[in-house]
Length: 389
Ligand SMILES: [Zn+2]
Image (tube, rainbow, N blue to C red; front, side, top):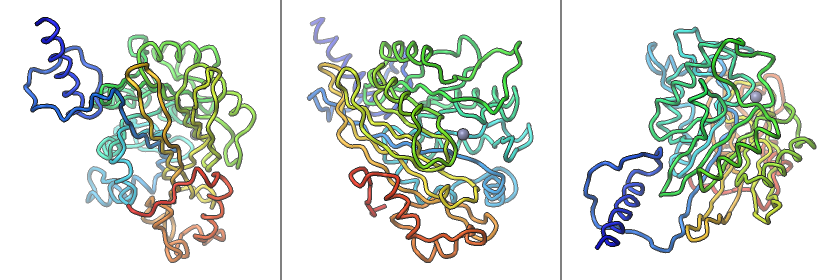
């Protein structure tokens, strides 16, 4: 009897987690009575991850969103619309939020000191992003208040975790999201913050790349979660290939328990590969996903990648199978002088659109160029070439 009650309680808890999608771990389950289970007892949980690169919000992007909202508030829908289905379809959706969400009250900012409206974050959440990194070189651009505003914005979002920036000692905990009863931890680190630092008296910190810190947090994350994702803001801007330090860090992370490694910062796409960890696990690493969206003006920065990982978590032994890893190419498109900035999947982006790209006022640019660049950067077996969006 006791065993049966426990079994029913467990089943109810499992069902609740299924019904709710991905959630923050909770102490008490709400008191509701779900319908009979469509439940899979195989003990295998399939999860899909999509990861986007640098969400680099230059002034034209928020100005266009403001215009679309009719002058008050911001509507970012059009900028992301062509790729929004890909994000919505994934169980886990990661993004590097390259600019702080200090909010309009601090005054919005463009390069080199960015500050973005919090409505941007709300739009990302509505699209389905639930794993956010704020560990990047721009996180302190809007000062101490911008930093704290960014953290409190993300902490207030239900079923979304943000890693890489902490408000104080109590906030410095491993960030864990629960998805179909599997716990996913996100760790995030940056090489630096453009010479900016929090005042010595201020609470909180940015997570900087540091072997000892990463090894310690990987150990803690493995204790608290079933799958550990690591976001790295690293490498050298505009470099076609990862450098030796990126490769060394990737192997170190894999050997110390990372399950998937997502790289950002160079603003261009770099290669991806499957590493073998010291214990034999297969660990996908994406060295740089390039820009998700931006108003940059170099042709190579218009091509980004969405990392895709399909995985199966085996509840019986806690192991993780990587069923598939791939990169789906995306293009930042604009006309004129940064007008109508929009992300498209490369597979549906036409030669005519490329011929009308605003970047052509300064550079040669074509769809063929983007296809060649993608072929150069991402091995053929890792290319996602689907066209059905
Ligand atoms: Zn960066």
